[in-house]
Amino acid sequence: MFADCYHPVINGVVTSIEILKNRLEAMDEQVELFVPGKAGYHDNDPHIHRFFSVTAPFHRESRFSLPYPWSNVNHLKRNRPDVVHIQTPFNLGLLGEWCARRLKIPFVFTHHTLWEEYVHYIPLLSKRMLRKTAIDVTRSLCNRSHGIIAPSEEVRERLIEQGVTREIEVIPTGIDVELFLEGDREVARAAVGVPEGAPVAVYVGRMGKEKSLAFLLDAFAVIAQRLPEAHLIMVGGGPERTPLEEQAKALGLADRIHFAGYLKRSELVHYLKLARVFLFASVTETQGLVSLEAQAAGCPVVAVRASGSSEAVADGVTGYLVPQEKEPFAEAALRVLTDAELRARFSEAGVARGWSFSSKAMGDRTLAVYRRAVESYPGALAPA
Figure (tube, one colour):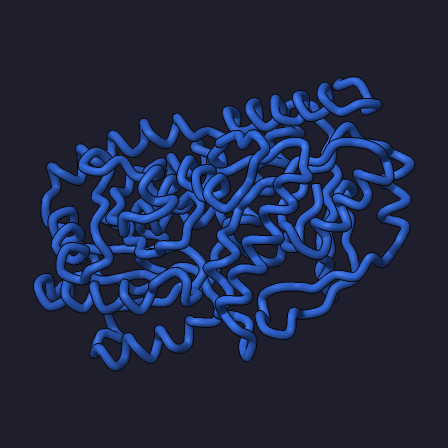
């Protein structure tokens, strides 16, 4: 696997890669991961290979890698794999394609991110041109690949509309359901300082403009006005954290909107068990992984009806899908926050839905894509 992001960065793509890697290894497949390095960060896994990288100029959380040390590429040559899996379409992803072509083996591409929705991170250049470039790069890579994976049906349809002609397999990112079954809400309550018995809403994810978090805080202001004892916990970090903290102060809600920062995945369940509702407002998701994890933990979801979320949340069954408008969003959240019977029904259905998105199913279906790519590629190694 080749990717332009991995730990210590925390985001949905990193989570997806980690879950898939762990699941394939549990199925006795050997996975070699090639990702950016970062000074001072070390892996205990000998199958993770780091390239020298520097901070991306326009996005401090991203890394730009150079093909150094070349011994990483030589390692790949000496241990010729069955297939290369590209997780991002730039930089190291393109190096992965180059390696696959040199070794005469197939490569598979997963389209995790709607890159055309992230062009606001690059200043000065025309956003229209950047959007077109992002779409062109993705389409070209897809049509050169020997297998394409999309995390949702909506992403598959979008790729087809953008000119992708190869077959696309829809495989949602799996979740480690067991990780979200047991948690201690008092751990989260004590860490944040939420009063006992207070109705709590939670957001988990990256804090970037594309996540529509300014809208989420404005909607929570409506909730807070009608339910004065309500609190919101924001889990995660990113470039918008400081502006969001300032917005919370401007709304007069600094004491009721809590910023918990980045957390280990094993800690998230405590916050999801504490919360009565999970709030999600992004309209740029390819799947809505965190919404699935919330449901697996038994936390009902209120999300904006948009790409990714529309397939992650069962509207009226595990939560609500609503327009990106403050009043409908706040009203749906208030309904869940104040109706214990409704929450219990959504919670039970959410846990059941979580099992249908297990990492085992993801691993089985991804391995099938690899095998089809190998079998249809002339001169490739026979599948193990």
